[in-house]
Image (cartoon, rainbow, N blue to C red):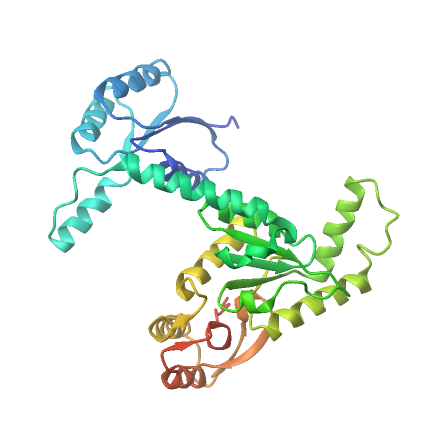
Length: 344
């Protein structure tokens, strides 16, 4: 069977990041389709739209699809009307949402946005985050680690660097610190007290496999320590003990992509706030949400096997946790009370 082909035209009045992200998510459902993406960024006038349509029309005998994120109503309508004339499928992905919010709140949207300033601010914030993250990779420049938004700690080959880079692209300043068995942890723990520090771990067998592949890639298969099963298991256990001693949230990256790990970290960052502390209100919301997930579980199964941020299993009594939340004053340590349930 021949693969279907699609020319996907992504039109934006800004950088195009939003429409690209949406298109990427949509295309995951059509893996059998051969797609060519054309990104048309910073489209501000009808003349630019005409040029885009002219290029699309050159491929009129092929499958073309237009997705746009244009906030200007008139320009968006101009693009839509001309797509209809040329019989090109068209979809705007922001306008409907904006209309719904406007209708629901009974307020008008802001017509004139200073997109240039917004883009510049976002751009410079991202550049600053990327520079910081590069300079604080693999335990470098720890003297100003207190300026990091997120700190990752873990043994070698647990995807700390690529995860840090991904988060930096999202605007987070990230420092990552390697844990080495038998070597004292050299970072002042007092500096990490009010920072969001994440312990990164992985399955022993999976880490051995990754390390063996690494040794093969650098022609160093004779190294009998780096991927030694006993050494690896000991190293992971010691790292996890450090995480638990300091009440750091722990993420198991064994079966997770960089995007999934990063999304989990961003979620933790969002609900814990800048100082790594969880407000009582947020905690209560998490508890209620988790109870909602469990509403179909039989009443006698009060204690359930859960995972704290996807790592170690333990029994959790939701009623007891709820009671602890009620008794908490002001702020609570998220690592003591907040549990992300892993319910199949």
